[in-house]
Length: 329
Picture 1 (cartoon, rainbow, N blue to C red):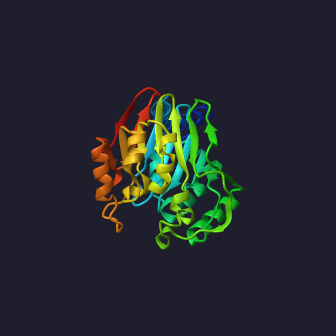
Picture 2 (picture 1 turned 30 degrees about the vertical axis):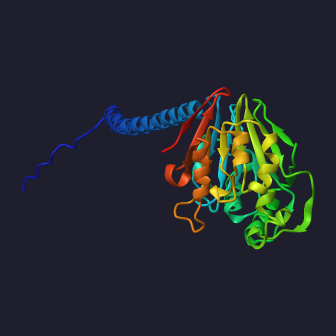
């Protein structure tokens, strides 16, 4: 039998190197699209973040004062952003709804609140501040010098202690000045200490004992920026307001006292301060019947434009210190 042998194929070293180079070239070429896509995604993210930064920087740092009555339901929560970007929070509402307002009116990188103020220790004004303290760095805490016994208030005190914040008690004549010449002047209460006095809820008191009314010791603040003035009244009523009305002067905006309750305003009060705009912070279909018809009639009597958070949502007033514009639904 004759055997035929096929010649063995031989390959030179140079040919092996060429094949290896081709394989590596194919691998490199296949990886280029992946690298390109990753680079494109990274660049897109940077571009998007840059756009958001520029937009928010222009929106929130426009050199004007922004006064926002947040829509927190049946309660009060007010954000003031000064023309140079300082943030002031006055009350926090009955739940964490205030956080949405802060997110909508502060740049995403700004986690500092320069001043947090509690007008008085009722839950519909303080509860949201607990959530704020857990998410933002608060520089200064201001309130009135009251001792009050409630679960919500004790919880607030605990969170303040964890954040190493001690209260600054404000009285009539105290003023907080900001770098852009925005100021908060305390109009009420007068300079007396109530630290050791247990205060009852105003529902259990009569008009003969207004000094024991928690609402009656609400901080009343006059916000000024240039010629623009706003009066913030907490839940104070006519027993207090009639005492201070002639010391305030004319204002532009009134945060209506006590959610528009029937004992919140008087003819004397409105005729003295003569606001152009009144804003009522109130919850829809609340069980208190706020705002009361008598309060609405008083505002109409003095031809004061009125907005309310239960119908208009949050209300923003923007001022350059000379005039102001109002934004609401």
